[in-house]
Length: 217
Image 1 (cartoon, one colour):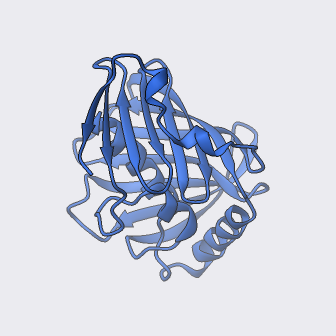
Image 2 (cartoon, one colour; image 1 turned 45 degrees about the vertical axis):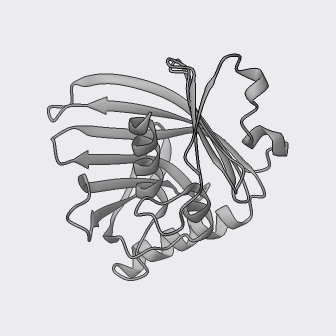
């Protein structure tokens, strides 16, 4: 289950956390993405994770969804039975294979960046970045931003973010980790006006018969 959290956190850290300095042209693009996200009251998005080795050979793919509303979020990975719920006060991490849910508290001081921070505090001093230019991917006009983490202890050494030029949203993120593997996250669709009930972000124990609860709060 910890691997799921790392994958999701890495994706959104790479997607949303940018430095306030560096290339002015890149900053202009990121400012546009930030402004667009601020217009969303609730977001629901579907994404695909593609894992490759250093030679570009496909190792596997996974599909998932993420829902966000204020400081609440929910992440689901299709076919794995793994889900993360957060109502802003508590985080429930559920693993279907063991029928176990772990409850923790959000930690604003943690080194990993939580979903709320990712979508509200858009800029962090985590990367050096530059705008590589425009390109066309799957008939979409995108702008590529190359990012290098300032913290050399990060598990990845390079990130390439593609921004949809027309929509001003993230199209994909390509993460090169230090082991030589590559993770490519692509946002398949995004609804910025989703109608999301508050109970969507709360783990309902009654819907998971026999679930073992590990309370670490």
